[in-house]
Length: 330
Image 1 (cartoon, rainbow, N blue to C red):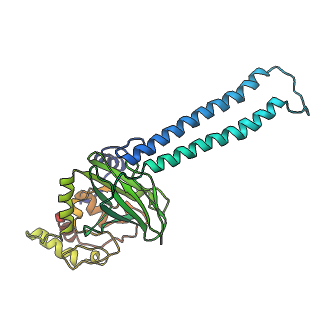
Image 2 (image 1 turned 30 degrees about the horizontal axis):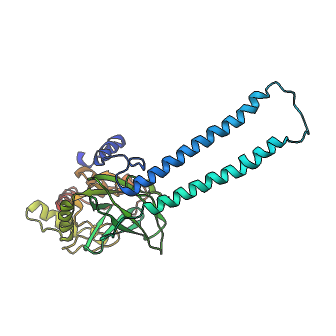
Image 3 (image 1 turned 135 degrees about the vertical axis):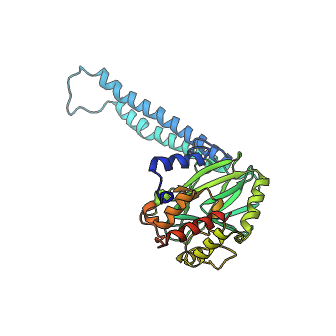
C-alpha cells in the first residue's frame, strides 16, 4: 500500500524541520536560562580565540626573528625564556581558568529561576523514548512537553534503564537522567513556539533517535491542552473508528500501551490516549502522519533498527482500522 511507504530520509528531515520554529541551538535562545548559557558560551569562545591568537603569535615571532640564526646546541635557556615558561605557561593560564570559573559560577547563580515553580513536569528516559508526567495535573504523555509561555516549570529527570541526558538547547542546558537518582532542572520559554530536545548522552543503538518536542503555548491555550490531556479517550462514534478500536484492543498493542478509558493498560511503551494530537511518533523520528504511523506499526525496526517495539502482524484491513482509531485519539 502506498500509504505505508516510508518517506525518503531527506523528505523526513524537511518535514521534521517544518515542525520546529528554530533549529536546535544554544545560541538561538528563547528563555532566560538559555540566554545566560549562550552569553557564557560566547565569552569563553572569545577568550579561547584571543588566547589562541596570542600563542600563535608568540610561537611564530621568534621563529621568524631567528630564521637565519645558526643552530646552538646545549646552550642554557636565557632568563627571558624561563620567564615566558613560568608566567606564560603557568601564571596566565591559571588566571584565565580562574576568570572562567568565576564567570561560570556567576552564570549558574543568575540562571536560577526568579520565583517559585508552580508547575512540575517529570521526565523519565527509556530506551529510546521519553515518558512525560504532570503529577499535579494527572497527565501522562510521551515525547512532548507543553509549557505556558513566560512561566518557569520545574522538570524532574529520571531514567528507567541506562544513563540519558535531557537537553533542549534553545531553552536550557543539559541535565543527566541517571538510574536510581533524581535530578532537576527548569524550563521557561518567553515566546510561543515548538523546539526540539534530544538525549545528549549516548544510550544505545537508537540514541540519535531519542528526541522530544517542547511546545510553548499562551497560558490559556496551555490550560485547554492540559484539560484535554486529563480526559480519557473519546469513544468512537462512527463505524470505521469503532472497527479500528476493536482491532486495536484485540491486537498485541494492548500488552505494551495504555489508552485510558479502554481495556488497553500496558505500561511498557508510551501512553497512546492522545497520540493523534502529538507532533511526532517514535520519539521525534517521524512526523505524525497517517503513512508514517502505518509504517511504524507494520515494521518499527525499519524506522529505528534495534527498537524494542516488535513488529505486529496485521491484515491490511486491521492496520487501516487501527491507524484510523489512533488518529482519532486527540
